Amino acid sequence: MNEGQKSEITRHGENLKRIFHLSGDPISISKRLRRVESEAQRYTTALANGETNDTEEVQNKKLKELLNKANKILNNTSNRIPIFINTDPRGYALKIDDGWVSQNRDKYPIQTDMGGYGIIAPEIR
Image (cartoon, rainbow, N blue to C red; front, side):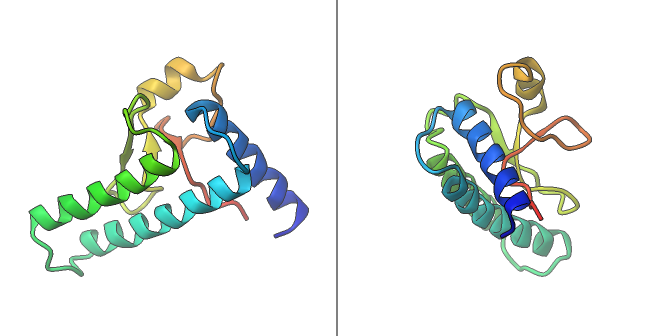
């Protein structure tokens, strides 16, 4: 990781800490969420490509488990901040609701996609 990456990851992690009222190392938080993001992206891509025989019940269970992992890292157990898994594999999977992002943009800045949804675990290169 070069200094530019480290700076961007730290900045994003600090934003997440403010949004979710977390303590701890911002790089560690970002990396843990990035692993969940990667797992969610792999699964949503497999779903979109018809590469799984999972029933709808199993799919929903797996997506809920991934969302629970992210909520645990973010200490968002009461779901006070509306996060969700985007099942469209063309974008990031872990997102914050666009309405919440729009209402809180000044107080809690975060990277967004073209739809205005907050990106929880962007790939920073």
